[in-house]
Length: 295
Image 1 (tube, helix red, strand yellow):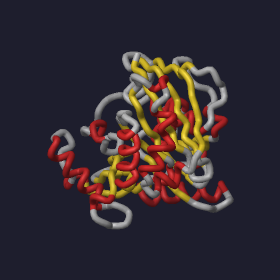
Image 2: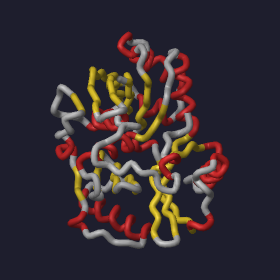
Image 3: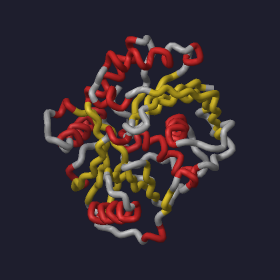
């Protein structure tokens, strides 16, 4: 059994970090929750502003807890700090994903698409999904400011705790969604963050609109415009947190109710596990590119 600890950070209005202790077996589907703990502070601002000193002090109690000893530590970041982008490329112009040097070229292509066109080293990037339609490839990536990652790494290092990987909150939740809806596209919202996702890709919309239905329609229109294909509304699973309370039997947790951060933590624990009924074949080397932000 591998011992994990997942620190899931909430959005600005939550100002909380939730630590979930997990034991997992990667050779078969088995994930056990061994405990959880919350701490409230202005973590969102600390991450956004890369305040390593405040992060170090605020996380000290959690990271030095005896229950953390011997556990691989992962961090799940607030979705509002992540910038998702999808761009289109001709398949014949893309690098060969199976070669290490070509993968670096691919990452450079993604960085050139960074949201504010600032120097490439301002951001770190994760490939969230790749969809091939005809002669074109649609590449979905997630960007986070490098300063945020470096502040987290610094806070963990000062507290003498190894940080193994960082990912967006929704990346963890997406794995939970795939357990419930293995082939069906889903729409999910959390606060002002709206997500459309299927097995290959993610589209994100951040909005302050109060009308949830309108936001869903805008997100669907974005999806249709990006991919030049339409999916009927009745084929989409509109997911609420209540849809996600029933977990498979091989996820062992005492509490039936799961809040958003708990679900994200559970999803992070599924990384690298063989999930029953899922297609685990590697296509075009893309699986190797679905990495967390550079450590």
